[in-house]
Image (cartoon, rainbow, N blue to C red; front, side, top):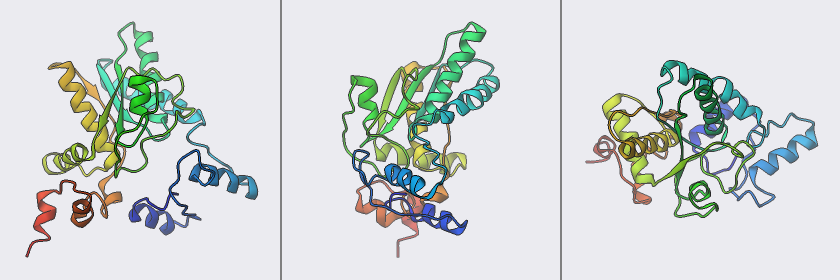
Length: 244
């Protein structure tokens, strides 16, 4: 795992007895990238390497389950689906499954919108056919500098690039107004869903995924000192706890 991940994630894995190897955060093209390190470790030790980024069993699982659950629960009435990408399995598999269901039922398939943080190249890949990058993000586990095996061939119609301040506003809004404690991936997803809903207009039905919980990011998303150091917004109730 990259050593830049939240201390809550690292602590949880160690708590349950995982043999966790922390490595410097390096781009995929670098041999020291955690994906390459994990592959080498598996080969050296005879371990099973899940290869979650390029193993198509990832997206096929979502195609067979997540997409069908969404279709059934929404009664086949979906105008758009938004989701961020780490491995790409959730977005690609759900998109493929929703297209399967729409074709089977003889209705129009929903728009598929890739939600991307700043610092990732996937927005540029969808919009311009390249992996151009702008800015950076404190989000973890999403965003890519490459097109993974799971993403190849996925029916993606559009993309939204969400800056951290917008995602944080959504995260704090979900907690304060809806009682939902979510993490960065969910904030990006919902922010993209809101943008898509505004673009399509009233009466449309947008689906997204709440992919992570806020407890994994207490030391970052809910840490006033960390956020102020990054010049990012802080929830009012967090600031109240630091006054006096």
